Structures are given as structure tokens and as C-alpha cells.
Amino acid sequence: MPSLPGHEKSAPPRNALEKVLRRFARTSYLLVVLLLYLLAATALGVALAPALALVQVVFTWAARLQPVPGWLAKGLALGLGWFVFGLALLAVVALYNKVLPTRVRPFKGGYYTLDAVPWFLHNGLFYLVRFTFMPFVTLTPFGIWFLKAMGMKIGRDAFINTEYISDPSLITIGDHAVVGGSVRIFAHYGGGGNLVIAPVVIGHRATLGLACCVMGDVVVGDDATVLPESVVLPGSRIGAGETWGGVPARPIPREEMEAIKRLLRGE
Image 1 (cartoon, helix red, strand yellow):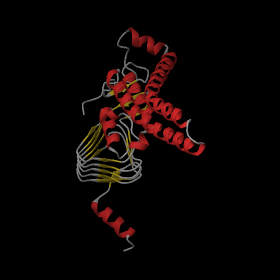
Image 2 (spheres, rainbow, N blue to C red):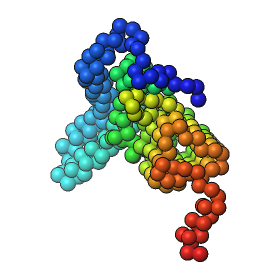
Image 3 (spheres, rainbow, N blue to C red):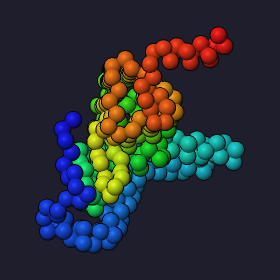
Image 4 (spheres, rainbow, N blue to C red):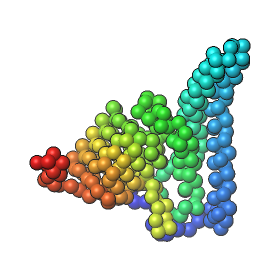
């Protein structure tokens, strides 16, 4: 990966706008948050519209029924309306991500910079789905479509069983890769006053075990394995066919893995 810009703790402002942004960092941050709330409200409102239309039609019809059938009809309308809303939200958020300035690039520098704004917007939009409807479409074609629409590169027959994802546009999943349940993948990390945004690449046929954590600037090679509950730190390069595990994750030699397997089998 090419070297990241801004190796110093905070690079000089590039223009007058960024100078103002840094001079009034907290106020600028608040304004961006309020803008994101406004975008989220419009996305939710647009996605709710077809669900509300469905509910209104069914409620009007159910008013002419006897109480018990009417209650069942209204309950069914509300339940179906939730899924209509969720599927509409996938499309609306994907559209917002496409037309808004959400093109995230590798970056290292201050949090209160113009470079951080696309990252902030991209994740804010993604989280709107992640924390509402994403659990209902994980492991479905709808979930794969949404991740691709948000910029994630997903290979053929990849198996993704988690919604705990951030920065999807900077994540690449190879062919036949397996991402286990509750795995956390995010292409950023922070420390020392810096925000670092760096891609994550998961190779072909690689396996990420249950609930492991893969941080920014990580490459997992083809046919490699990350054991469950492991934490892969930034900058890690897992070679093809290697097995890593632990907190922090480290290479585990084949002989050690065989010994662990024998121990688990009680041999």
C-alpha cells in the first residue's frame, strides 16, 4: 500500500475553509453532525413513505372487518411495513452514498480536517442501515447487494455472516472467502492525535473466525485463517496459508496448531 499522507500529527491547513474548520473544530463538528442527522432524517422519511402507504391502505380496508380479523390484518400490515421500510432504506442509503461526497481515500492526519468529512458521511449513512435493518439481510442477496452498492468489493461465492462492518468502500473480500458471525472489520483506527484510514484486503478462500476483529491497514492472504476472537492489529500482513490467533493476533506454526487440535480431542 502506498504511504499515507500527513505523517505529522496534524498537517498544515490546505486552504481557508480547512483553517476555519480547525479554528472552530468543536463548532464545525457539531454542524457536520447536525447535517448528518438531517440527511438521516430525509433518508428515513423517504424509506418510510412506501411502508406508510401500505399500512394506510390496509388499515382503511381492515376498518370494515370484524375486530379479530381487523386486528390480524393491521398486525400483518405493520409487520410487512417494517420489511418494506427496510428494503427501501437499503436503496435510499445506497443512492445517497453515490451522489454525496463520500469517496473515502487512505488518510492519516487530524480528525477535524476536510479529508475526514467523506469518511464521516460514508460511515454515518452506512450505520443508519447497520443499526436498523442490516441484521435482517445479512446472509441474503439483499445484504450482499447493499454492501457492494456501498463500495465493498466482494468476490464470487464469498460468505459474509456479520453486520459489524465500517468503511465498506475500503474493504475487499476475495473469492470463496468466509467471514464468520460477529466478525468486526473496519478500515480505520486512531491514536496519537491521528485518524488513520487504510484499506483492508481479505484474500481468496481466507477464513475469519467467529467474532474476530480486523482493523485498518490489514492484508489477509489467500487461504489464510484468523482464529475466533482474535484481534488483528493495524499493519498486519498475514501470509498465504498462514494461521493467526490471539490478542493481539500472531502467527501460529502448523505444529502448534496440530498440538492444540490433539489437546481439544483429548489425545
